[in-house]
Length: 393
Ligand SMILES: *Cc1c(COP(=O)(O)O)cnc(C)c1O
Figure (cartoon, protein in one colour):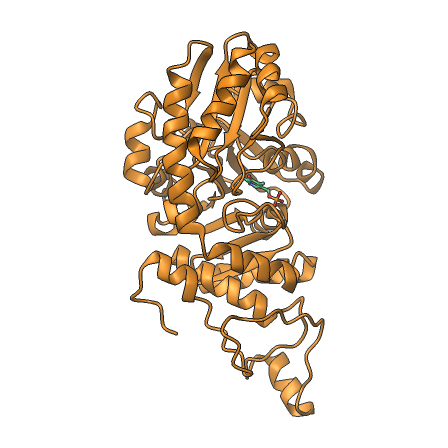
């Protein structure tokens, strides 16, 4: 069905465009590694691209394509590529846009491994990088070099909730002929559409909000135009970063409720953030929906909502934070985010522990910072749970 004139929640349900010949109401799982050609000529036509058809699942599969088409539609892109994980999507971008002698600029507080691999693995291939506070356009401009090829952003960033002005970042990058990529995992296309701001590539860890049920690992890339899409696709399929059809099916299913899940989690997040901010044992709270967030106005302009991720610090630093993490009962002490269940974790010893102390310090990831991913349980229960744990501090 043509969903181009439909609203977001309708697209979540009906986008995809793969029609099953047997008439199934939803796109089934095409659990096959390879596809039968009618005759030798058809196989040749599929390979040459003269006719569109399925060849081999690493190169394309209807279940995967249904998911990719949906994300293309939701992000207003040219084309999408589903990957085995969010990190496979990140590596596809790095490997496509960067080569020997190239330089990239990244926000200092990214998802830990997105920065970690650029500092530890990619120098081996002659690729250089700078990680700076990309919430300041002046800081980005300061580190631009003639060989800078990529500006890699995450907004709001992980876990410091810093927001980058996408319009200003695109303007600066265009002036210097630099391509831009945004990791949109924290927002999902429901709350932010970076391509609409002129960003070149958007990626997600589908493990988080897109799938939403903490039961698969997956990633997705959405390219703004055909040229970039074909370049990314070449790397993705030849590196073998593709997703499996069964994983794709689950992500497509989870995606249908993205809107209602985020509406609910976001409403609760606001209440949880206000509760934490007024708690005498809490030092500070960072949530884009609070007026106290340093970039509250920018967030209001750029995002369709503040999301469901909250960072906070308990008075007494890490020890006090540990008391909270060890005593919550409803919230699950686990990394990851964006699922229906509330998760709590400690970036300095968990998700960002592989970064150097200097990197964490420069990115303002304090030892006492706790990250909360608010789920869709009853908000009274989430707050009561935090409340009983905070009493023990
Ligand atoms: C989880 C995450 C990733 C990595 O995704 P995986 O699916 O775990 O490989 C990248 N970016 C952000 C913001 C994430 O939260």
